[in-house]
Structure formats: structure tokens, C-alpha cells
Amino acid sequence: MRNTKRMLMVAAAALAVGGCAAPDVGEYAAERPVLDLQRYFNGRVDAWGMFTDRSGKVVKRFTVKLDCSWQGDEGTLDEDFTYSDGTKQRRVWKLRKLADGRFTGRAADVVGQAEGQARGNALRWRYTLALPVDGRVWNVQMDDWMYQMDERVLLNRTAMSKFGVRVGEVTLSFTKAT
Figure 1 (tube, one colour):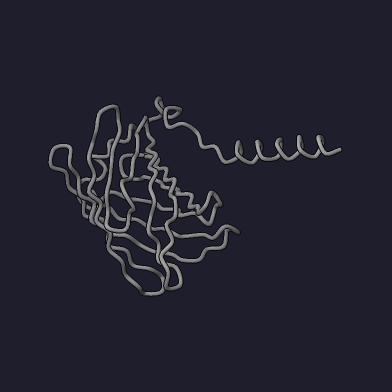
Figure 2 (cartoon, helix red, strand yellow):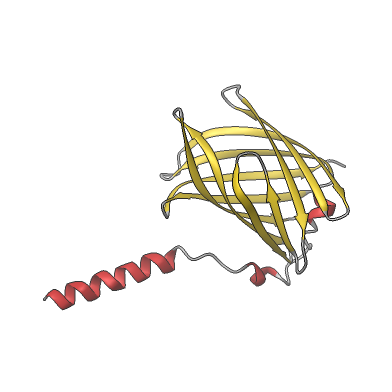
């Protein structure tokens, strides 16, 4: 009986871990249009987004105005957020293009360095965000996926977790100015 319970627990744990696995960015290599971060995030980009908690309830809505520029393989994404409650926030990303479609990024509220890779129409970023919550700061892991839909539209979905437990999701729609 004890062995049966142990086997069931191991099987349940394996299913739980496997259910959290994300696709590999390489699976999108043939998808078009190809996401060229330096081209898409250059100039003015506007975004609309929302944060949902783990139950799926929309907790916060926001808009973002991005002013983006590149000098060779070094990029700056200057983001101005306006939230539905009237609060404002600014995040400035410093990006670096590496070989093989890889990128790194830093921002004041990112713990350490973001790492990402682009293939086809997709980019996957992973980083830890220092997120203020009720007067405290939580270090939340971000699993950030971007998909270029056409020349102007890019969709973004980010799973947020703490201690391996999903705490919410961010969904964004970017539109590049013409």
C-alpha cells in the first residue's frame, strides 16, 4: 500500500512538472514574419496590456508608450506605463544582441540579467522582476513570450511565478507606429 501511494505521488509530481514545461523557441523557427527585435523595437511603439491573477481575474490594465533605439548591437527600450488606477511607472531596458538570435537585457527593476532567444516570429525572455506588492518587494520569475503577427502587431504573454507557483499572467498587444 505504501509503495502504491509513493508511486502515485511520484507520477503526480512528474505530471505536474511536465505540465509546466514550455515549448522550445526553436519550434517557431519556420514561422513568419521573422521577429527582428532591432527593426521592430526601433522608433515609437504603443502597447495595451493587463495583469491577471492566477484565477484569471483581471487585476490591472495599462498602456505603454515605448521610445526605442539601437546603436549597433546595443538597444534602449524606454517604456512609460500608465495604469488604469492612474499610477505611472517607467522602465528603461538596455538590450544587447548576441550571436545565434540571443539577447540579454537589464533594467533597474530586473534582478540580474534577462536572457532571451529569438527564432522565427517568436522571442522567449526569462528574467526575475523585483515587483512591489503591498509595501514589499517580491522577486518574481517571468517567462515572457513575444510573437510577431505582422509588420505592426506583436503579441506578448508572460507567465509570472514565485517559488515555482504561478501567480499570474501579463498579456500585451504592441503596435508599431508607421
